[in-house]
Length: 216
Image (tube, rainbow, N blue to C red; front, side, top):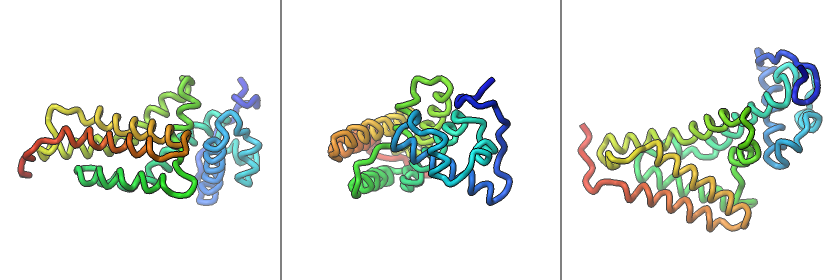
């Protein structure tokens, strides 16, 4: 059976050397940038090879075809999203969540912003493809996890009501951020993003208890 680019299937291999890892990363980085800017369909393998400075034999050493490369791009876009939000490591308090929100808005106030979400952009294009939905769902779940873990810590300390469901609250934060980024990018105005993020933060704040339990 042919691959999705019409060529015979090949058995992809992992990168076993530092040079190999750099080559694979160059291919994935080039593909991620092209798919972010132009879309998955428009990003041909030939264009990716030209942008990465690699050859077909190198690409097919690491990827069996475009579908496998797209899966790697989903992982890379998640890495980029998480790297752009270092405050996720400290969202285990209301202060930490508010600090994360301010940092997100600062990023989108930079020249060229508001920016589209790398993960959200590829998800919007692949949302109806059953081959990629599991990978996309797993990526968003990984993005939500720091919020869920932080909210559970707040709940354990008695700061967040025990009636609340941290996983669902975490999903609402990411959902608000996604929608806000999309509208802000389309309108070239950060206001929708700022309002969406502030509403998500206020939603958490309203669910706090007045008197947190003392830590044991």
